[in-house]
Length: 330
Image (cartoon, rainbow, N blue to C red; front, side, top):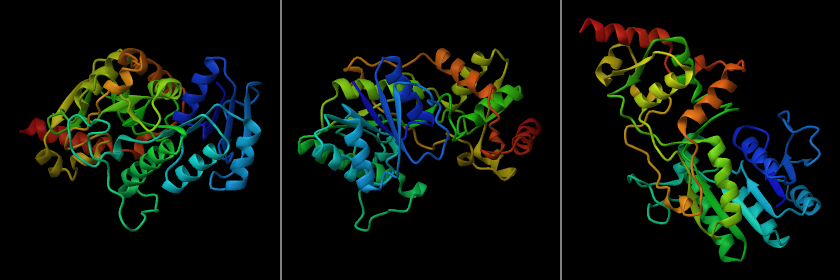
């Protein structure tokens, strides 16, 4: 099953490509070449350079590769999904898998379930600006375009992960917690520590994409995430256990945080309302998630070998130390 991956050299795309290579398949990467490819020199990997918005170049690359499956890891605008699915239909490519997001859901439900929980609405004026405020809208509209392409005969599906963690995470969102646990014995978590924002291990997103590409139903979306969704305090404990360190999460109320100029939303991964995705549809295809012990061991191992500096992510240690002092003073 030959893969054509739009993106494919960083984080989730890299895990997806590794999954296909582990299965013995051939892969074509299509990207602008702005980041060094970890797959240079591998015989079963071809590299095509080009902008995904360049219709002629993308079509040429697809015609050259003649893949069985196109996986789109970097579609952040509906127009990008529209172009990719249109070319797949015209070139008789069998399957297209779009990496959407749990942010596509516009309704606060627990859990959020495919086909039942409403998606973010698409406003009359296209929110083309790539900012956080329009991210969910843009991803949701991409999902609608995937469903429309499937109605026109393309084997197109969506995979919807929440926040992703794991090796190669250049976003550093999870690194904040890794760094705190490795460096300190007490780690401030906002509120009562029970904030729940579902996460997905990058390897599991990759395995989900392959499962959906092989066995998914055209037009359908599939949530992916950890089968157990830890709270923020539990994450600190799980990371500490994986690092073999005695570290305690310290729940710190919003009033205490406010006294030192902090708010809960400043902590990466905090959410005032629980964000949990239902996983029954994906599990029905035979997919299962990786145990946290295994996923965190790999995540920590890669993190320790990098020079990533997460100090610009989340509250500074001096601020959380002041919060701890406020707690101790009563």
